[in-house]
Image (cartoon, rainbow, N blue to C red; front, side, top):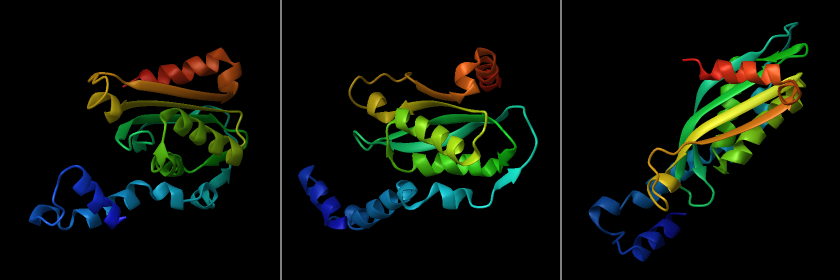
Length: 181
């Protein structure tokens, strides 16, 4: 990868041998390894033993989970917040695991739409709750600093499964809760 970065520096008209750029290829390699670490993580291993039998039938919501990801089209960052809710059916998951699942999928080359669906599906698959809801609000640097250059644009995506899809009251409760400060 370092040779690729050196080649990129040459292609854009830089000198990879100048003092300020000597360590750049190694830094960029390390950065991409960190920003794409989600490829080397497995949801089952991440969840591990953090699923607990618990009779609870109300919504569990973890909101305002910070996300940082890379757009797969331009490899530029997008960032924002994820809101994840589910209604258990006898099983709950440790709250920190919800945030870790969001991170795991965000730390891959992504489109926001797929990221939203992946988070919802893995919770549905492992917990088998009555329903799952995920909303992501994000700013995309590929829209802010290039292309259309719309500085105040925010992309919002959602995935509703189970009772969040079939019951408008449940969906509205979720939407109301994520709007609250």
